[in-house]
Length: 272
Picture 1 (tube, rainbow, N blue to C red):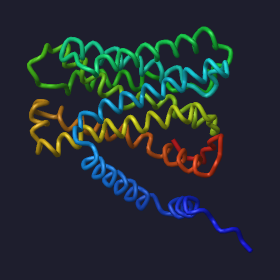
Picture 2 (cartoon, rainbow, N blue to C red; picture 1 turned 180 degrees about the vertical axis):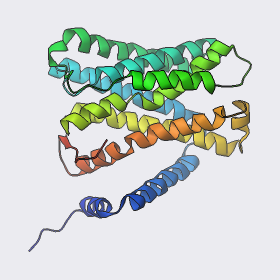
Picture 3 (cartoon, rainbow, N blue to C red; picture 1 turned 120 degrees about the vertical axis):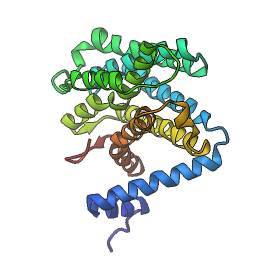
């Protein structure tokens, strides 16, 4: 007799057979369902942003564990870590001069650990760094983000330089994971710790996106008005949504791999 498929395998096989439009529709429905659940489960939606920062810190902690235990940085993108450090440093500056709250402390802790990861890759574990696979040109994202920040930024009462810096870190955060995805695209095989880290990023990005969307819904659009006028308010939401969908495909295969009992994640062609 043919072995009966596990429910998760049956569902994943069915989803994989669907055309791109159906997959996109299913992704949107799943995201909206998750948002509805979060809206009723989480009373203070600002906690979602704190949770996003905490999950990001957990992801970095997984990287630290990998670097200390396995003494290798194979499969990690130095460029993604550097982009992450840049947007965290800029966001930390903005947080200090513009608001200073719990987010400031979380950003400081995450930046410190990210800088430590960069130091390990650059100096201590350089021999295992896959430089030929980490071939994403970061000026393709830094330059456009800087130009976009100059053109579209908050119209609040803060100093113009601070408003531009705020916009820059929002845009850069949305695309900072692209070099890491390029490394995984080049290798096709993602070892467990790297997979856990990228999945944590995906969860963090979704929680951050959920925070903004639910805040807008609860305030009936007043939050967008508070952010200023012009294109900046919708650009904030678009940036959050973009960074969530960038990692959605990877997160799907990660969950599938975990439920399938696979320690090493193998990505099919066309993913990320």
